[in-house]
Length: 264
Ligand code: DGL
Image (cartoon, rainbow, N blue to C red; front, side, top):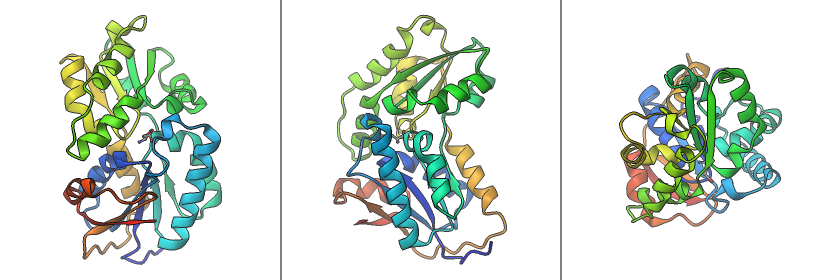
């Protein structure tokens, strides 16, 4: 398919988590125009039902793809992807890249054979995660913990606001206190918000634990699906939100070269 060089890549999350994917996308495709879209009126997805998430994600991506005509859309959110990726692919006629928990690379990295997985409550209960575990980590022990406090902490950190350090210790204890948790040497950050807290999580888990997330893999996938296409990004990109844009986010958005934010 020949795309208009100015046709954007749509990057969608419930909040600021997708910026961790945008950071990798900028490295892979610096000239790609991006529209960063966040369902801030629906945040946090992790505490919603499957039906609520599927309806919001399919509805919003449908609306945005008509309005912005993206060449490709990325669901930069594990919760939305593990629930709604198949449905969105069925209804939209552009390539859709999803975000799935990095269990496969974690299984290759672990030496102890015990992997921790931090995600939202909605993500950790998905059959999608069970299938990844069965396919790639059947001979490993995978311990899961739902950590909504980390979503709130990441949102606050990016706004330059103080956050509850208890969110970090609760996530660490949530994995470590499970049977076999002391053996964890690899932690999958299965929520795009969590790499924003890698420093805090690394300090709390200790130097023997390594972290893995899907962002670099997603950027590679986008680059491969758009190979040969021309990109023209002459101005800074913009963001769209489903709730009134929060001025406290402007400095962080600007670090990702997003200079304007509007209500969708
Ligand atoms: N960033 C989202 C994810 O990757 C979830 C945050 C939320 O609960 O909305 O799962």
